Image (cartoon, rainbow, N blue to C red):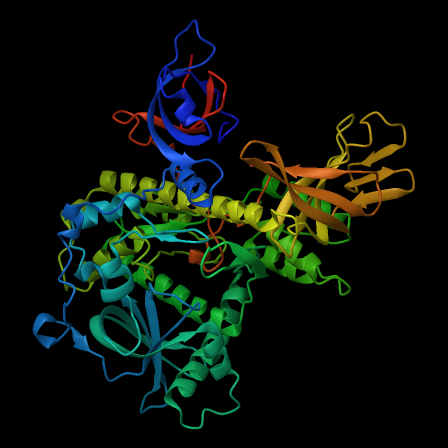
Length: 635
């Protein structure tokens, strides 16, 4: 059966038919003869038994073109020895900041720690605040095999049960990771800030740091909640950082930065099988916002610095303003509930979203914010020389210029920015290839493409684990859902789309027991309402659904939603791969909100000139195999 039903079957000749039955196989598309309704191809290799979690995970990586092979020997040869020691002898030109109380704040179990912070009181009463970022470029030299591999991968990919790194593990989880109680190389941004969050001065330095603590968000939150610091170094630092972060955030919001939302969830996995045992919503604490504010501040500060020195060669990130047609549907939906959404600029949008509150249902406002993100264009990496300065603006963050500097372990864009910043402050020459606008254009296109693919693979992994969670005799669950959209087109099959907040599931409920031409149906497009006899469904209504998994063919399952309340007949929703969404928004969390970057120009085919088009299929008893391909062949 095909992984992607939009792709036609591919005909292959094989003598291994019986052995391949029930297997996921990789197929190469060779040609599409004019006389044939299907393209021709050949067997490449077997991935494994269809339906098993590891095999289906491998399939989704293949489907989204995620590099997942082990790092080649020439890349590993670039690594320093495993017992590499950081000391003054191999650290010329670095400032030693190991005396500062630096600490990191991350999710539990985080191993690739990119960033750390410190905040001390200066003799004049101001604060010195530092954002310290892993100095990946100390180990990854421009033009080496490891650098070229990182540029190709462009990003780490996070699945539910595994992480595929951009860099080898020795760097990702050890030498570059800013772990507690060890010396590490960093690229530091140091500000002098008043207690009222006014920036007095800023400096950029290559440094050596020694983190005194690797805190989780919950641990940091407990320090913020301490009534007094009692002279404790960690408590004092975190409370000062939290105070400054509140002021920085308030100014960003006043300038028009958007506070958006996502229905993302996280799985609790069994320690042995790694199968999901529970689904939980993300809990965002003030500690999360604290880290976010200082990462945003560092990114904005660095973007201004590199632009002053390299106005046409800087690697930046832009988020175009949306046009009104993209918001028409949301404006209409909000209006039917008595709220006006103003999108004249980001500030007016933010204010109108803040005002759209229903006291009896707090989730209504979050729904509006979730839908708002889907009305926006994706954020994208670009070279500053390719756009006018007025087009550099990041709409979601209300920032005239923005870049990514704070996550070089997992994003190649940040590696480029580190090299630009090092050249700007005179500690290293700018690599020759970063002086070429055509190279930067291709690099940005690849980074956008890879980032988008990593997002899609992450969502596919969530969908796979959702099916596993709801499978089995006791897998069915019943929960509240909200209506996101109602089909009101004339003579259309009666249906509506819902989101289940508890599980982050979204799908279309088809009222299969009601005929499209039933005289009792009333469709109100202006009010986004579908009525049947004495019952109705309107956008943003809360309904009750039952969620379960149905096997439609061998090794092919669907997530199904049955409408429980209100009673509109025996209706259910089948969530196919095209319809289902464990939604993330078009702004990346890397942008302080969330992102779905793609290249601003038409992207070139992924090495289409010298690579075959590989396809994933499940072998069946049919002589004609249906397959998944990255690119469709043409007659």
